[in-house]
Image (cartoon, rainbow, N blue to C red; front, side):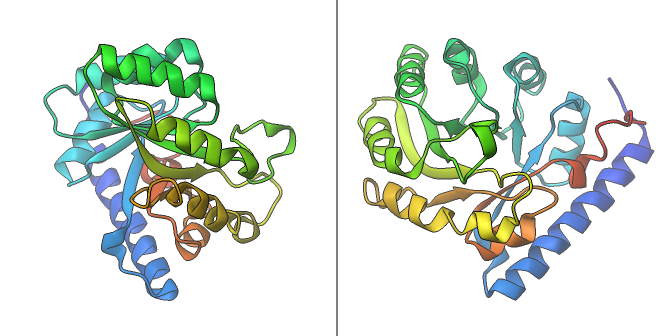
Length: 236
């Protein structure tokens, strides 16, 4: 699927706007914007958008459904980009995701740790794994492990050949102020770093709460709508 100059201009403007927001948020928090990684969430958008953003200097891309991510990654083979899997992951999809993803943001149970480790070894790959933390999501509808289980999960990942314990990930609960929810990131990150001091990644913040995430210490921002546009509208 090819896209015209209009889409290139739109993505250029949106990328500039998102980076400006990050710069402003970092200045307010007394942080260096160079410490943060912008992950472009390209779900529902074509591989051509990945290529356009790559041309604009973007190197990290995220997807949340294997059915869409696998073929999109295949279409982008040859581009030296980092793929992030950010959605809730079923154990039976671990082998497929392990073929293309470099960073798995949503590890929240021991069975998934073992499945990813087995898949990584079979495919002779090394996967960076983040523990998804439950920040109080009602009913657990957004996934994540409670704080009390994080040390056990961290030890399991650290002990699994083919996996690297990278840090934590969280999604702010619906109906809760993001700043209050993200206060739970610090103890979760500390619990992971107690197992591996180098596991400093904190993946938090999306289009509507990136400023709060930056203030809370996020290192990776998962930005979709602000960067790619409203997913209810077609790509022109």
